Length: 393
Image (cartoon, rainbow, N blue to C red; front, side, top):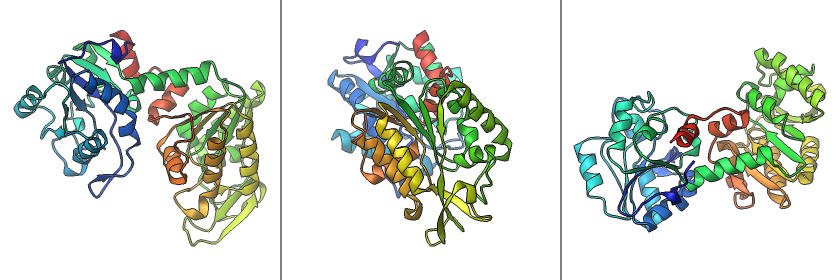
């Protein structure tokens, strides 16, 4: 891929694809992590007097025109505050007024187009939509790592019509994951949480051939515990995935790679702050009780393994950390990752990043990845359409 610093930029109209699909509440951005991550590329373009046209999406609109609930207006306001600079938002994705707004953009100016997904042609990767976007600019820069696994018009189709480059964020994401997978400092420990084994079975399979140990938490652990023959009470379990989970456990034994599962669990009668809770070994989860966090013995064991690691990758919480009653496991794992300053520590996935922010550790890890699904597909060894398009340009 060609990097943005190889492009001729002064006075050029630069179409910058970013992923600003961020949480918004009451008209304000509540987590600006993804917006801040693109600032190095944006400031480079501004300093080199490019005329910057930002394109992005927000949420899942129907693709039939403007929807107030999914406007990028709060995002433009947030970005303007971070840049200390006006960031105008167009009224439409495309159209005569949008073309006029682009033509009026001075060198060093920043304009944001409305939500690309207001037009159904974006997700359909329609060539006419890609060409219409390309007609607004002279150069295309992709800095949307979190969206490169989507074969959409603004990610893939547009590279057919403009000289295309990678932004600094996208380049660093790919470089970081490649180094982690191909040249990790050892021991290499991966921590996976979340609710579904089915979402991460391919990642588990691929990581077994890369890591020295896999730490498992979150509700996904119950499907794996069931594969070991444990009764898991009323805990969430994917019955159809017990057999595939058993194969993963068999593969780990064949490769000599540890899969660490909880030895004790915090269970409750319901998913509620006020529910009765109990700490029990995984061999004695009461019938009707729900596992909602890893227990203290598990936390201690996991934290010791993390402290010994020299490369750590973390994706997914250990429990329902949004509720204080079930936040201890995720808090202690976040602490262990942050405190291991001898290791390269990489954190990805929205919930893991939210946990870092909640517990105040976001500045203490080596790298925070903006990609959720994109990062997981990269770990699986999949070819990501957005990256392939840039490499082919």
